Image 1 (tube, one colour):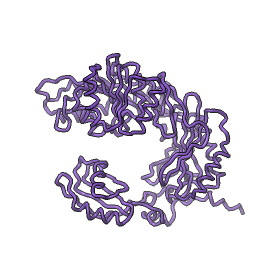
Image 2 (cartoon, rainbow, N blue to C red):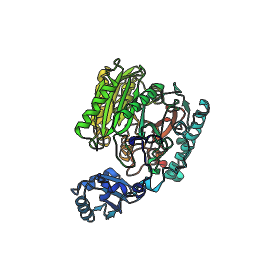
Image 3 (tube, helix red, strand yellow):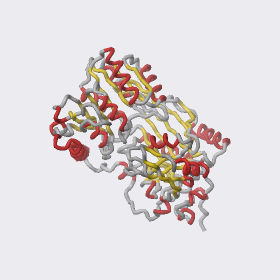
Image 4 (cartoon, rainbow, N blue to C red):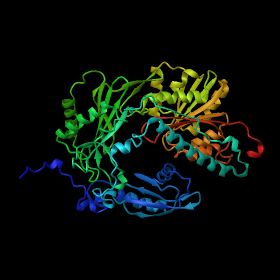
Length: 542
């Protein structure tokens, strides 16, 4: 009779417990889902952040706010029943723009693992196919497919803008055409950052599998598959770290995290690399079941197993999640340096940096060429983050003004500028809607030159208030908009180009050109650089 499998290797994907869609609320672990309310009759234009401010003004302390898109409904959770009861009482008497809110208790969200059987999941695509869906196409064919997809979205832009203009639509001003798709200099193993999940592989029943999740969590799929065939996107140096990490956590004596039961320790491994071969790994652990002693022991185990780094090109961090998130430096340098367009940028465990360094250089060069920057240009970098775009483009313009809401990002931006000896750049902390007019007023006094704004927002695009700010400040005569998801920014594009209104004042922007850059070979993703200008239109069109 064979030996019994070690307990750590036993995996129960569908148990009697998780057949109950609310089993996760009965484990004794805290979840705010049991203290949830539903709010109805909210004005459509109220965002989750605006709703949060309204709730906090009622002396309430919400945990999560989920705004159902294109509805007048939101779900809000609290820390305990007292908080929920207080919210029911106070918000039932609350009005937003003369609309009285309707408030009631709400049931916890059902677990997707009870609704969808993991074992019977019919998605047979491998992680190779999911992470690199175009891997079996010739690269030139990939680019042609992406150009076609871009043009399809552009056609939808034109239709939506035409609806806003009606019969006075200046069609020649909005002929959205993709002018060019620039290839990535690196076609294989181009990513400089990947996050690998720790979890169970349904086929092998190995709970210590390190790789990519095969499906969506919301569909009840948590099966993890090893990434070793995904060499189109992941460099081989990352594969070595995945193997090493798997061997380490298997021998650590601590269990892998189980996303069905929310129990366990090892959650993920983040690996970053740069052009000089520096490797930075961040081990992500859930500490909800760990004592202080355990946390110290895990850090000690990492030091013992990874030892003294062989050189200055290896760094190890430990990221604690589950309670208050924090990152601890364990071994090696606390940062890596990447050279981009002649500038050096320090990258830490939590830094944002384009995942394809070579293509990022092409992207920033494309921004410069598209905007036709010169020594008389004043660049307004709105929502500038850590200042990468402004710093790289600083040598082509008279001055750069970077505006960013997040104070820590502005601090990093200033450090990056100082380390690169960039003196013609100024950073401002604050809301773009408030800060931008002040900056423009200062530029006017100094008579610095032609003003071009550049924005490179997250996937979801810019907040409506920032679009309104760009529209209302007519000193901004040109705009470069960089997007990694042109489907999600449709409203941004329409509101930049629509006729003037109370919210979107000033002259509308007109489309000049668009150039795409393939930052993500073998996938359907890409970046697009838009160039907009505004000139006075005939009065009949405004």
